[in-house]
Image (cartoon, rainbow, N blue to C red; front, top):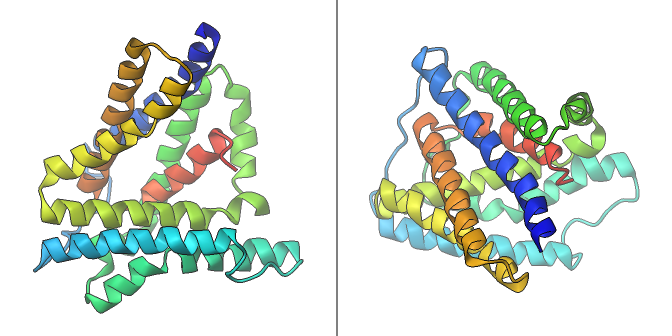
Length: 257
């Protein structure tokens, strides 16, 4: 049991500290006025309706995802390059399409999901910088600095690039729900509710493993806290482009694909 706990800590703690370093890098760079001018996001005239519709869109996304798993979306062609560069990304767009359909019918701009092309070069550049901070901290704390070149090289492989749309669209969905929850409640609830849900999601597996409550509560606090920090940084930066690059590189660091 102690070996399992050490193994989990060896993964989770470096991951949490890596994302903390990423967020701190944004605040530190922002204080020096080196980043983009934060664009004010529009608000909703009917926030409760938008939250309900956002939750329904989430259900629709999960439903379309099940259709994909059952093989009912765009079928694979047998051509590896075509599958990875066209069919897989297009299927991801179909899966997350309820978000964009809802934006269209509600006549809401892309900045209501913290997506804007203004000062795009700065956002991409900082995204790469913050990504390097994250993977440097993660691999360093795990004693795996030798993996840095491997991770950076893998980022430009066909296999990895084909997964970027899926990773980025996950950030779109996160911003979409967060902003509408913030509209319907306030920033504190918009930060707190996802943090609690994310932290609770790890409790059942810990209970099944028979972990002590001190272990469970510690990781509950840590995962909840970093969720709040990441969402708060997202809200302050009001942009998912730079965070999309961080998410992509960190997924490579943890071998998510």
